[in-house]
Image 1 (cartoon, rainbow over the protein chains, first blue to last red):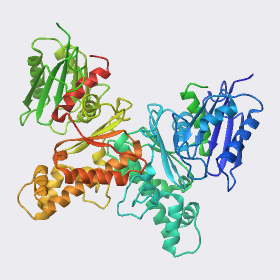
Image 2: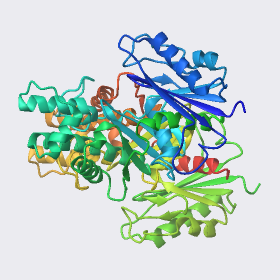
Image 3: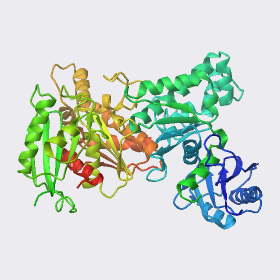
Image 4: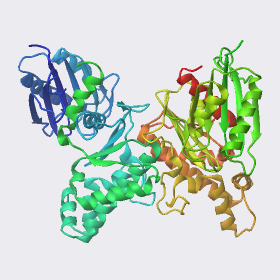
Length: 311
Length: 311
């Protein structure tokens, strides 16, 4: 009974998640995928590379229950060199710079490991097991605390020459727009991400209250006009970015995930209208919600192993 | 001695060009490619599908001197369905809608034919024989009467789900910018194409004189401030479009061709600065002039046959 298991690991900003699948059965079925075992631990404040890695290895071994996995697929929440499995940097946790994640996990699990960044892995998860099923090319975009994306072209991840493709959040859609931390004005992330929309609403209301992206959506749903304007502007910005991407690459499908996509019809309508107005009339932008939610990176990690021929 | 020849055809807006290469020798050499025979005729005003096709077939047969080609590669100046070789529409010449170009040429030359649009074919030409040599991924952009582009990703053309990828000219970089014929404001083509820059200069000077893009560049070189401002704005718009494309796809190289790219340092500096300011600091946008000039589509047509395994 040994060796039938694929292990998926997801190093998020604050959470470490892992799942085990029996690759001989569950994954290969159509419909809703089922995990053999799944778990999650929190990465505490003050965590670093060594503590996170140790916690994740412990979680993985627990879920495997003494079995050795066929292979280990990994989603990492930051830039990674896919070819070497070395982390470039972490936006969240110190000590990850140049960490040889793949090599360390191979030693810990005695199995081959593949590592990619969360956007690419989530895109692959939706492509293989979620909303992307049946399409050949897609851009997956997560709209959350940041705005980032991953491509699947011809059924394979497109990572770009330097492994940095998919940064739709840093495309500029309004050069006269507000300034972003990235130094530019009017990039998609500055206008469409949850924290920036929340900060803009607080500023507009002159409020000392600290809003969240979710609160902006709630107030908009209650008819608060400033919240509606900011939410619609965020949807517009993302829509222009998607329309530009449609003109440039003409992918079959766009898939949107992340907390901001729960903002309701006002937001979705703004996104779709701006995308349609920006794309050429002959170019069709099929924009759909993601299906796998928080599980997209875990399922994508399994798909990553499939593509590498390891499970 | 029969059957060593590849025939390349380029259906341009006003010109019909053709070239013959000995695929056993010339094309496969490194360095500057050499044509066995090359010719060009003009598509007269009033030309239609039948007259253009007849003129091109005549030119091809003349250049072949009675030899039958191994295969025929075709660049067409408008949208084409690559899989079927049927023209979708022509922006220039009437009667081309739904013309079965591939089938008609196969009958005329008794050889297999491949057809693609000029931007994709020129991109492939630069990739194989021009500035793109040694790179794995590139976006080729022609900046001329219009602004259009073609992708090569992983050494192959990326045409998009509906065959419409590469339309960088219709990406929006300034939603408060002037209105384009396409109905949008501030798309790259509206700001960066030769005719639009010329019209903007005429309007700004209140001049009855009819300018050209080339004249804008000449006046800018002579220090005329309005011409300089318009030329720099055009370069800026293209640069933002390239920077956005760099963030989205992270290609290894950008290659720029077309008349506007002869506008001098002022223009190139504006393009490069805007692209660099728009792309993330870790993303490098290598922007270079095209090498093959008007021959890019002809050489690309030969490369198209290579990729299809026909020569």
